[in-house]
Image 1: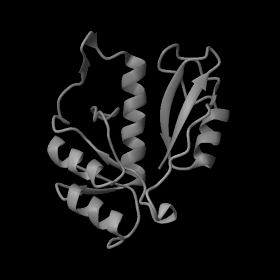
Image 2: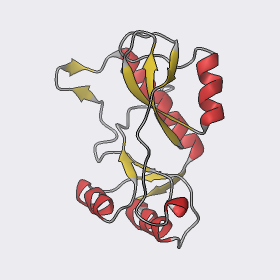
Image 3: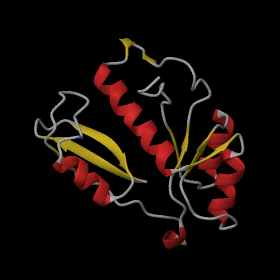
Length: 155
């Protein structure tokens, strides 16, 4: 998975996760990426700061996804229900994670550490772990991302 900072033609900035740069370009050309703020489909990559590793940067594992502990619950922002465009974007992100990464369940923290240490195959994974364990992984230098885990679009 690759993470891009994106910007629409109305200058709204947002994030996106894609299998690779070819996948992003194909979706952008087809107008299938939309801005969560205005819904515009003229989207391009914005300038990003480089991700610098600690030592062995060339061997760093890909980011891993950790659904939050309340993954089965409906997600709501503090101000009310989640806007439909944001929900649709998160559903597409979930589908991409499920398609492109290996599900490791409650073994997430252990497998993320094994990948980080080079003891397991370097690949994208997702699963469950506690907030405390996720913070411990971050402190150890394991690159993870905690994603809002919304219901599937087809459910």
